[in-house]
Length: 229
Length: 224
Image (cartoon, rainbow over all chains, first blue to last red; front, side, top):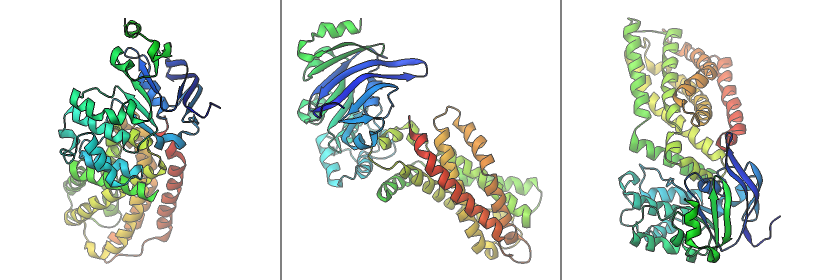
């Protein structure tokens, strides 16, 4: 049983796709309210790690505790406490941004007023009535961020959250998903300097294995760049 | 669970209203098939067991079109993940999808059954209608539950367009058989006869049985 102040506790966690191991022997701990930044080249296992923590993938080896609950057995108990932003926005193209967020608000039993507040916060209030299919990638990403934070989750799992966002949009959503959000965060990034900024712990993955795990303050951007060499 | 089902059902109907991907195709397929039967049989009017068979075979194949599309938006647009990340009873998705298919089938039949009467049916539809509505409702429920289960199973496969009819059609034979037997006396010449109670019971038992099976296994279909 992990310590109660740990938001994440993984011991020897692994995950396969068929015969191929996507994650192997991942052991780490993250205290509540802290930020873990995950680096690694394509196929290193970053997305698999996030999907496993989000309860969307079952761990095939080791122990995984999220918000104090063991996965996969207690996945039901943590789902409503996790905000997940993956590569797909999880929005229906034929529905408007507002309709999509209202739909998710109903699933999470959140008042409709929160939808308006979130649309304002991500800067999408003016275009909230447009079908998602008619929006730019950056706008869709803003809506996806709104969807991920709609229920004010304790744990944010963010897969390259600033992809497709211009600097102004990135600054606008930063209070929702940045270090100031107050949530425990796991963020994947390919930007050594930007990724380390605001992070407490840095994790480097390569071929599904942990090759770097250290306090972010002790990691130089050059070490991260070596992961991609 | 009721509010989750309501949210899902509302989303399903809105998406269908916007895209018009399933119901119009099912309606057009039904009408085209009745036209083909009209010319293929070279008869203006059919009655009894032949009429019943033509009616149900056509509706069953039309239903397969809807079953094939049932989870496409969830699969292609991340709806599964969005749903699985919410703190809700997963059975709500089964109920909402089955209700969606049930509603789609009812809408299709609102057009397809009068079209069948116009193109092929000998006796007037009015005399058969009260009993036929009951048979349609029971058969639709069975198709909706089984169809949702099969669609949920097939959506994870690359060959879902093949898997759905290959699995669903054999499993729907009891529905076809019972619905056709129930409708035969309703569609005979000289006035609608009573619906055979034993075949109605078969339909009801089928609905109940597959509702229980779907309830038991649907969660596992959603699991990774």
